[in-house]
Image (cartoon, rainbow, N blue to C red; front, side):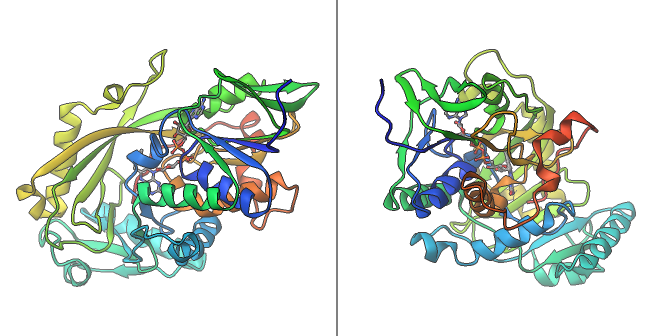
Length: 388
Ligand SMILES: Cc1cc2nc3c(=O)[nH]c(=O)nc-3n(C[C@H](O)[C@H](O)[C@H](O)COP(=O)(O)OP(=O)(O)OC[C@H]3O[C@@H](n4cnc5c(N)ncnc54)[C@H](O)[C@@H]3O)c2cc1C
């Protein structure tokens, strides 16, 4: 019999998994994190890296606000530079209809207590971001406490801090099954053999459904495909993260000067095998449309050298909100997945909430909207929303 050296296995080395492993190790729990590839090899590496509260669903806003409070001191806490910059988020209106939409969003979010300004005309928006178009930007919302960070650096910083606190991180280790006996988690199975634990955290992004089904519980996830374009390093152009009212474009300038820009391209069907990086590369017409939208609001993009183009997938739930919950039918199973394009910002608070669930403590924020069993009742279709 395999000797038992861990209490909890976390499946997935994206931001949700590494943040959970860090919090668990900090709490003195013997945790092993299992990642089938490299750390941040899926959504947490593909991401734009926006850290945004503005425009969040009312149910998600308290999590985003709590996450931002953690981000503000995260570099210090993890003792690593993660290029977090609290430089704001502008959501742009390009048409009169979009102006109305932004006005409505600002009123709703301010009523929920968020510090969010309406910039009513082009001059007001360009006072924050002078490189924006004079003609095509009519108004914007501006949230000064939003920002952005380096996703790879953040995931690695969490992983190193988790290891320092006693977690074991195993990359290139795929979990094939969550092993359940008598309604209770007893371990996970990997190609190298079983790992006995009595709690499992599934934080496996788009593969979370597949893993949950091995424990007999479905998790409805529909992948949506997203294109990302990154420029060569450019002189300073843009401090806030950009989104647009209908979510068909988002972008930011990284600390090193590269522009990183993204747009969703539509639903995605899994190939019936492990994904290769080429599988998610975006089609040329989607890249061309993304670049056109970027130039429309940020004209200097027309002259920018393009360094890289990649694709990514979002783990969309039917209502566009994540599942952060103990899955009651199976004792010892906790899920943090289905972030639907918003999970990078939430990472620090996801880790904290998962650790509370694993320890059987009362969650520090209300998790009712993120329960797993809500999908047994309703399933309205959610749209991909990328606002940075
Ligand atoms: C292009 C793009 C732009 C985005 N922009 C933003 C943004 O601006 N702001 C924001 O907040 N969010 C954004 N998001 C969403 C955000 O990036 C994700 O919600 C977040 O990174 C999810 O992290 P995760 O750890 O839950 O999942 P992932 O990062 O996908 O991690 C899951 C990990 O599990 C591993 N895994 C899967 N199956 C197994 C298995 N069987 N065994 C072992 N390991 C396994 C995978 O290899 C992967 O590394 C964006 C996403 C994309 C794709």
